[in-house]
Amino acid sequence: MSISNIFGIAGSAMNAQMVRMNSTASNMANAGTVSSTAEDAFKAKRPVFQALLHEHQLDQGSQFLGGVKVLEMVDDTAANKKMHDPGNPLADKDGFVFSSNVNEVTEMVEMMGAARSYQNNVEVVNTARELMMRTLDITKA
Image (cartoon, rainbow, N blue to C red):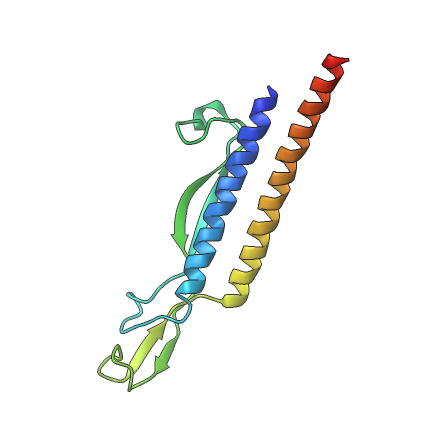
């Protein structure tokens, strides 16, 4: 394994955490939305990550063993809330609307987890870069 793999692996992790952060931002943006049916109401999105441990998992988007890739995005299965709001233009004939199933506390935890993981991978890159620079300094002496 070469040192360039470290950058690739950390990059794949940062990319995955960025997808997680984007899904959290989308969920937070849609937290207050309503719809006239439960099926049309917004459902929180969650990325599913896959560890890249075997050669056959590598493809164009993921080049380094040990990295991670986003396998798919799935909808959160939590039920949408039904609220009585007869004045809402989206209300059904009985005066009900369905809100998104986004839990803002859960989204904040997801955001902090994604940010922390992203920061950890930035530290991996910085440490690898520093070690490379020290190695070059040794060869100059």
